[in-house]
Structures are given as structure tokens and as C-alpha cells.
Length: 327
Image (cartoon, rainbow, N blue to C red; front, side):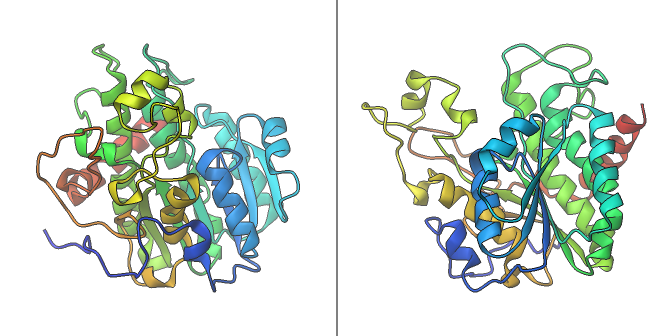
């Protein structure tokens, strides 16, 4: 398979921060949407992009909470967006399109935590697949006219090294027939994020719209990882005995500023001009590594695997997603 999925030698490192990769980049006049841009990595991205001159719209299920979180950040507004509610997505899209603004950068960052018991969206679809993939799929397709109007745009979807651990569950992606496993559901949704970037780029690159999937690393302080409890975090090597986060960017354990860097890199770096449809890792294009690498407290494998960038699977997922949205 011919692809562009190999490092390009950017000069950045796993320890580089969002401000590092934005150094010298002027985003004045650029419009950005960040889903869940009011917390965790999304908030770091919102702040960094604003400092670089961008105007940012934050999509949030709780606009009041989001507005409080982004208060004082220049050129930031908040819009209600619930990725598990198709009507909410359509309303958010309509408001943005009615504003007449082009959209230069869309960061599909929001994610749903893995519950022990299955949770479903308004259509009955499993919540992680619905939020992490389908909701962002619907949002991105709806915003297509604004992305076209930018005359050069990027769509970055936050994914995870968990894409290594599951292909799309083609026979039952929404767990409609039982057998729910939260870890498997999460891994599938993260693979979907990468495949979405592959197919979106294939379809829209000729319009100047390029797509990337970005793995931020493992960040102990995010709500996703902190929700598992201290004992589990210690077992995973995320915190020490005193409860302090273990920061080891070379092995994938990062601060929020380091984790956000790869997302912002995908959204803005001129080093990626002419590229798209690839999975980003440590502020570069990831190599492909299909070795069966174990996940341990000291080793967090995160390079992309072949099933996550397979063009046939990417096209198949696009068609499946459109069918699911049409129900």
C-alpha cells in the first residue's frame, strides 16, 4: 500500500509544547472551531490558538460552564453542541453557516469517557462511537461549505494510540447485539477517527481541505485518565506513590501542553503543507508499526497500525457512517 505515513523530520520532539509548534505562526484573521475547547487539551488548544491571533468558537454541551472556563481569552465564543444529539449538531452548524464566516481550522477534540455499562445516544448508538466518531462526522460534513470557503482548511481529529487495539467492529459497531466492552468500544472509536481523516482527505483534498488524526499522548491530568482512580493510575505508571503525574514524553506520558502540541501542529504547521490523511504522533507523521507490542506501565505503544489507515476500510466506514446518520 502506498501512503504518506512516515516521519518527515519536523525538528520538534515529544516534549515540544503547543506554543513551541506555534512559534512564528500568525493566525490573525483565521477562524477555528474546537469541540470541548473549554477543558483539558481543548482548553490548552483554545488558549494557544488565541495567543497566535485566531478567533475560536468552542463547542460545548454546557455553554455556561464553557463560558466560565474561557473567560478572559481573547476572540473566543461558545456555542451549544451535544455530539450525541443530531439536532444539536445541526443547530450548531446552522448558526455557524449563518454567520457567513469561513472556517480555516476544525479541531474535533471532544471525547466520551468509557463507562462500565453501555450508554446510548438519541439514536440508540453506543456512546463512544457516537460521540468520538459519528457526532464529529456529522459536524464536519455539515461545516463543509465553511471549510470550502476558507480557501485552504484543515480538519484535525484527536485520536489515541488505542487505535492499535481494534479495527472497526464491522458486524456490530454500535453493540446493538450485546457483548459491550468499554475498552474495545473506545479503541474502535479511535480507529474510526483515523480512518475518517484518511477518507476525508481523499475526498476533499482537491478543495484545499486537508485532514489529520492526532495522538496527543497519555496525559495523567485529563479527566479521562484521572477518572480511573489513583490505584489504577499508579498501575499504569501515570502517577507516582505521592500521586504526582509522571512526565516522560519520550515514552508517551506528557503534560497537557505537550499533548496539545501534536493537535495544534496538525492544525497549523506549514511543515504539513501538501500532506493529509495521516496519523500524527509526537509532532510528526507517525511511522507504521504492526508489531504486537504490549501495553505496560513503562511502555505505551502509539504508532499507527495498518488497519487504521487502510483506504478500503476508510471508504467503507464513510459509507457506514452516512447510513447510520440517515436512520
